[in-house]
Length: 133
Image (cartoon, rainbow, N blue to C red; front, side):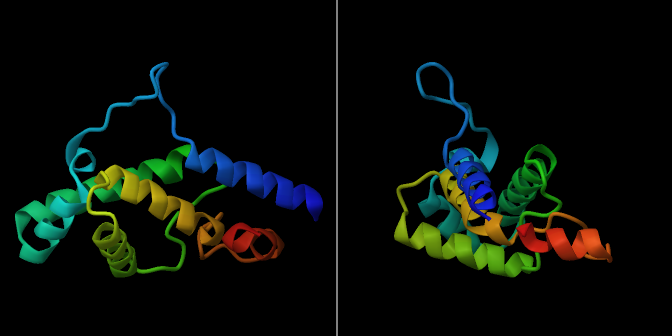
């Protein structure tokens, strides 16, 4: 059990340290480079602009699923509306943060409850690994 906890701690620590260049910077493209205050403004208006932001978010979460080991779905059993509500709450509290920072923090929150396998996989391996256990 202690090996599991140590591995989990290392995995979570690696999530909070993002890849950066030698100067501690990295490039962010699209909606992620905008601020949380802008996200809240766009969310209140609906329309095609908010769809672009949501598509950026879907791309980020999909890339997370592809690049982070032992992850099938970072959002697990949550609905996408719950994800959007979490981001709204985070951005209301941190309007000066970049949207990419909000989404990165979202993945840290979701990581312990992620799906490791598709929900339709049954059997001992699913029972053992379901939701990161």
